[in-house]
Image (cartoon, rainbow over all chains, first blue to last red; front, top):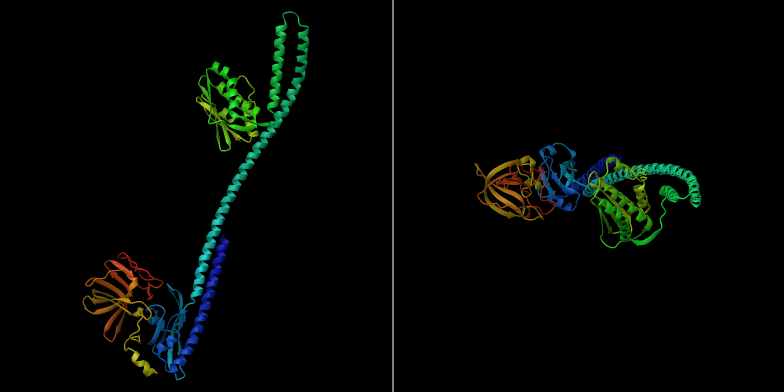
Length: 396
Length: 142
């Protein structure tokens, strides 16, 4: 931009100099031609008015005047009413000079010529190449226009580049975080798979042992053995749940009504809700059909409502479902204890929980399920007042 | 040839032709006076009629024909008896009639610029109204 400006300015100065030189040469040439013609006409006794009448059509000659040897004006003509910028100063010596006027730059010449008889006359001429002047003006306007465009484009380009850079940096940060998260996930997954495998083997053996024992159980021990077997099954379920929670989510999509799974979740937690004296309400704007993994979506809603229930001591849970163009939104709002700042930061972290029971993978699973559906999950929480989770997924 | 041209020369003046006049910066003067008459007259070949004001100078009581501008260029209302100040180029015609080609007119507190300092007419470039200026802020020519 700076280079363009500098180059154009120099170029324009150069052209301006050349133009002025050209006009000056034209002026000298025209003055010479006029003086020769005037000489002939004066010798033939033409009056100055008659002489000027012969040259009145020249558009580049703005004005001219004929003076005698004593610098007395014999005749003059001008394209502009009453305009002949002649003064004592300009009559002093033969010279050329430039006047700036509203009609543009006028190149002036005051010079003498002689007739063969010896009489001396002076010709005063005001000359301008109006087309060139217009060209210079247009060139200047074009220069400013082009410069303005370059500046505008430069600014837009810089802003665009800056935005791109910001976007790139943000994406890079997100990718790095995602990579870290995946690394962490891989480590945990490997660890848990190993641990689960190590536990499962002796657990299977224990289950077989209890099975054998139940067939040959001494009297009065059946109930204890049955309890033992139930506990083993519980441990096995926990291990299975633990392992599956860390596996990648694979969707099996089908069309279903969102209200159905929410009502189902509401029904399954009704008993616990009554015990905690918590009221669960569900509202939907209209029947919402979506294409998603029904089981996983139910799991996600269940985990959210279960969490809300466990956070409440009385009060209520408000579930809302609505649809906006191609996005479906599920809101689960509770009036529970809310989250601390640490809990907010680590809400979706696996194995993080302040609860006495549970593995702390509920919200982690919800997030996994939502992301697998190309959706997003957010929450707002205030300690002592409650928490609101919002899920948005494409569908409809 | 010179004998033919002699009648055209006015003794004591720099300008040869009585019927042809241009704005001469060397003969500028300021006249303050009262408007005696307002008329329209042709002044330049091939142009519209000019507004010409007869102005009686205060004190000397000399009457000047003040050439203002083409009639279409002016939107002021002049009235007989009103005060007017003119700055312009002076010339004598017929050996006795004083004339002014106005460059600037001060009237009712306004300054109206008609020509630039070299005498270039402000009305050139198309139909324009004479630009009214506040007192003290005259458009002093281009």
